[in-house]
Length: 209
Image (tube, rainbow, N blue to C red; front, side):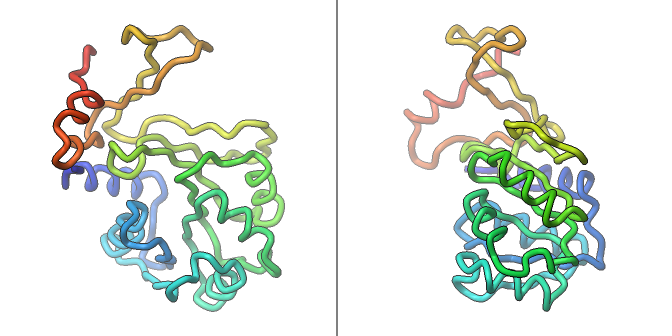
């Protein structure tokens, strides 16, 4: 159960971070049952940009996506990392010269994919976002810097009005470099699981901080 304010916070952060303009063209290809579709729809319309709806099934067809991006001069698109791999294999992907933002979330982003995007689409900003079901879309973000040659892609830092903690089994912060469990606080946290009070009580705890 995500709140209105959590979605609004997420959209406002996204605009501050990426600066969508009314001249931008966003490709809406995520099925509306998935949370990413919320920003594809509402971020675009809130900022007066152009929203292009992909034909049904196009999100699974890399060649069709390349053609759509070129013909509609798409500037902004989202990929689940496994789909990004297929997209980058598509013929003529380097002809997608209108692309300005590629956003990834939903799975771990492999470093090899980052390096390939930087090589074939060097004019395009690549952004890795992370967010679990228990929060409004995303809670951390990382933008790929020029010259990135790392072997591991970070999930980044907290978005606006969000706090991230790495805690041990006793709920205490772990030292730098130690393994811990990620806890989320702030505006993006959901109310809980719909009609599942026991699970909500188990997973949603009062912040000791």
